[in-house]
Length: 331
Image (cartoon, rainbow, N blue to C red; front, side):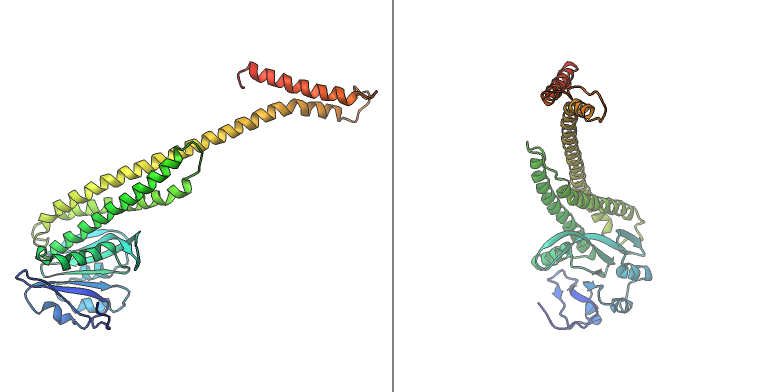
């Protein structure tokens, strides 16, 4: 990997795809903006928005209107897809990638596509983008149009979601085993992150599906060449994983309800035991309260056996309470 300082602001990597469909050329860090269009093919430029000079670089690239430039430099955290003047631009949701591991934290990929280029920007490294780059290295002949790369990005995002769904399913399996175990355990704290992740992914995925359908319904003269062909395939892919995530969300909700039900049952059992103990202790308390009054002529105050009589009364009151509870079927 090239580790030298970059010539283009925010440059992460870039590819130039020849018009004859041969192997694309990966640009080095010393590449300049003019190197992107030295032939009749198209290029993919991937930029890091952490560099504040990226907007100035985009101003030097031809083919971008003001709305597309704004879409590439925005810091909005919601999905958007716009078709205008044979440009496709907006924001896709993705999952972040750390240097040593992959995460389920959401990130945002901003893009602009025409027949001559695909430009993407981001703040954090993203899982789908990196896998798409690796696939280009392995099988470059599959990608002959910029929209093919867009399809690849969305497809890799779908595969990322499938991977997350499998991980969350395994986590729910473990939680479910504990929930339906005989020993009661409160798994709400462990279930909460799973539900939060599922809800966030499902919300953004539904938005992407709606935007994809809306973009596919745009006028043919407005959309880039080939987008109409891939829009249906991408929508079908996203709908498939959407069903899986919805099922996962429903399963997590049912597990939460089951945990609440078990905890409620356990609380009711404790309250039942406490009520029984109170019922048993209330009559002896009445006896001891009566003999604790500092008044004259209390029973058993004369003689040496008053305490024994009081103990007998306490035991008798407990037995009476037990008989009454059995009589009304509480015990």
